[in-house]
Length: 168
Ligand SMILES: CC(C)(COP(=O)(O)OP(=O)(O)OC[C@H]1O[C@@H](n2cnc3c(N)ncnc32)[C@H](O)[C@@H]1OP(=O)(O)O)[C@@H](O)C(=O)NCCC(=O)NCCS
Image (cartoon, rainbow, N blue to C red; front, top):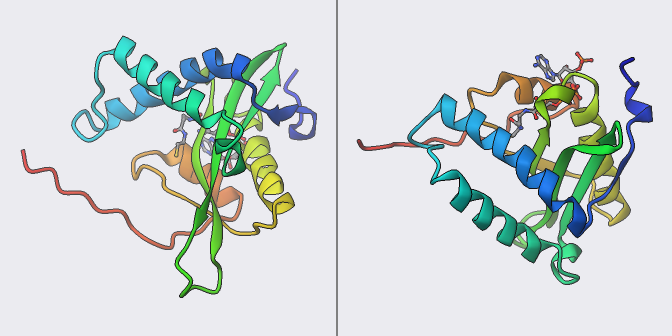
């Protein structure tokens, strides 16, 4: 039976969650590479996994946890998705000096369209709000309609466009 979003448990990630996080991230990365093999083109899988895992480990330190938030969702007794948020300082010229940035949202492909992504992003927004941050932003690939639909559904609107020029 498909669980309702309210029943999808989301919690702060622990170092023991790194293995499923890396696996789910790898799925996401391959899907991006298919869309644009140059811009999203990947180094060999083993190397990517090592580099990504090392980077994530550094973000699980006490100090990094002050600005980096990782949440995981669990279904069927296993981690099926994760979200990575970060607190971003903006220049003092802006009225809003701190924002939350949604760096990564990914759901294992066997568990999509069950409310996992929505539940995790909303949980991240709540976690940011608990730290006094009420505004969030993110980037999404122009050819990723699933993610775009999720964000629009949650009230995100387009503020900027990210342009690229690949000269070969
Ligand atoms: C994008 C992603 C995180 C969505 O996660 P999900 O758990 O499947 O999304 P949810 O079930 O919570 O969907 C919430 C809403 O988003 C929209 N949505 C999500 N996936 C959609 C799809 N494939 N088609 C259309 N709308 C979609 C719908 O409005 C949906 O609400 P509904 O099911 O009531 O119609 C998931 O597809 C994923 O992991 N993709 C690969 C990783 C990725 O590209 N991440 C984004 C990087 S910026």
